Length: 70
Image (tube, rainbow, N blue to C red):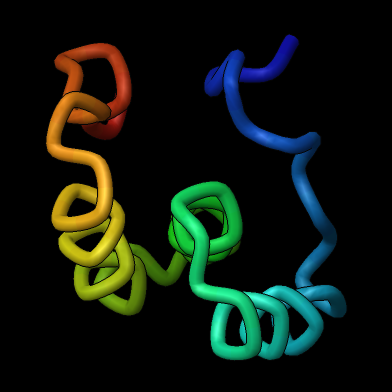
């Protein structure tokens, strides 16, 4: 079961570069949050922080206790 019900299914580590390109080319909330969550899922939470901040900047109502490293 996915920990993040609104996120796209988890991507393997090899897809990180694809997610990075997608978030850079089209920086929507969904693309940015999916990249941040992929970093976290791949044991790189420090890399997710700037993307989480950007996602919150784009959609401040998205900040929810359920998304903060459950």
